[in-house]
Image (cartoon, rainbow, N blue to C red; front, side, top):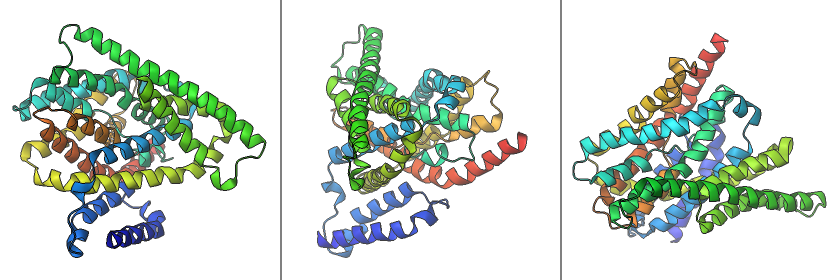
Length: 405
């Protein structure tokens, strides 16, 4: 235990010393965290004569960390959104969600039926659904990069903030049909009911919790009751409170956090940056722990279970299955080809997919191990490929847009 503690502490120290330098390179934080988690689960135990620790990390722990991290990232992402820009270009995120997301699931379904004949049709639909939502955390390098035009950044941020919550009811529907717990008759009505419940309860819960929380935070701040060292804590607690309340009420905690962040944005106004900046450290810590756990728990088994169809599906999921729907859903908006390609490529898969994979593993589906392997490979490739291309492609795209203006 102490040997592993030494290695982990040394890693955190070493990364913190070069974090600013790495941020300007093609090496992203999640890439480093995942690689370290893989090392800790395999190489380090063998160095000290210990048992591999990857098997000891329960998937519930990974799922919980992924949920908490995503909840906080969604809340703070919406909290820092540029409302005026989002209102001006609301057609983009609306189309990405209402047209692009269903098309992504459809393309993933078609590819899955061709590559994985052993999976049932509902299992293929589950696979396509868990790989449809983009990751707000992995996309931070793009949506916070000022060289990318505001309308593109805000559109991608809004999409990643809502698409995982929208996917939850469809995943539950396909899981119910695949496991036989949901009657196939009345499927359309069940789908509508699940979507309405997840989105409606989530939105209301997130808004109410944030309204009440902001009231008390504002009163306490006015009276000077919040110690400086505790200043970032209320925002972290508020995001997790919104998430937990919505989940307990039967809604989507992810929708709750995104809506809660929007409410926070409106209430706090121009002062939101003073609150969001100190709290960003918690987001980085959550991400570090999540990706270390992913590297320790999922990478080694996924590498061992790799096959041609698995890797091919993962690559297609990150490219054509995303790019074609994006190109189709923005028809008529006047987007240039490079803009379509840029938005199509930057649809990273990460935290939401991790949570969805754990939901699948908790069932008795015959194809759950294959679904886990495909999902883990897609996330792993996304961490690497989107990580090394985020800064260079954003800079190149930003320069092209600037040259045209």
